[in-house]
Length: 196
Image (cartoon, rainbow, N blue to C red; front, side, top):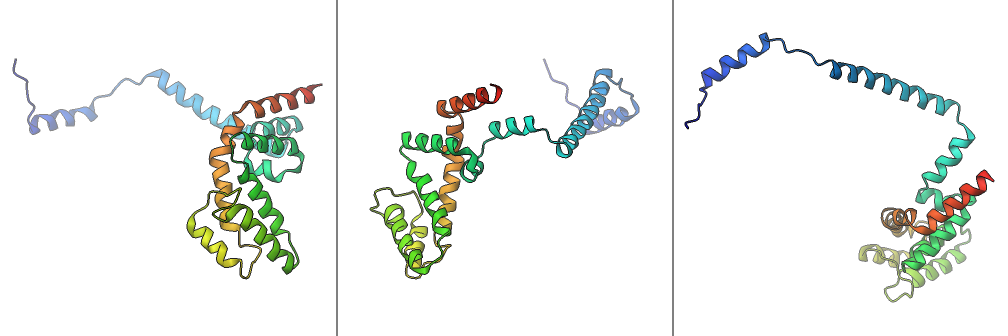
């Protein structure tokens, strides 16, 4: 059976007729648009209300549900979370990452230049040196830059490596930790203590 082919002229004639035709509007689409606008407005009002009047209960549950690596490392009230994260990393044979990050943070608080040189050497020998017992996974160029900076160490000589390790933990280890049994049981335990 031969197929009918429309010529360009015929196609444009049909196309020109289309704007003149009124298509019936579907009422369900119109109503859904109105509902979406109302829902968006309600969400905006709820967000503004939550920002101006934060409730203690919602903030308590929110910070437990949305635990980030930054909160885990910086917040002193989450010591049990940090200990659980350390043990999780130890079970995955990557505890040198958290230990290196914490050593770099302690290194930044060093005041005297003599202590600075000594601590920099210790960190390099323990974590950065290619034959280190707890070697962290950093780029060769970063490793060489740190080695050169050890001649005259500064507070920022480990910054690039620390940032690299932080991003590695944030992208890889922390999401797996948040889905691990150790974290889920810790979260369950803190919830039961909250309600008791």
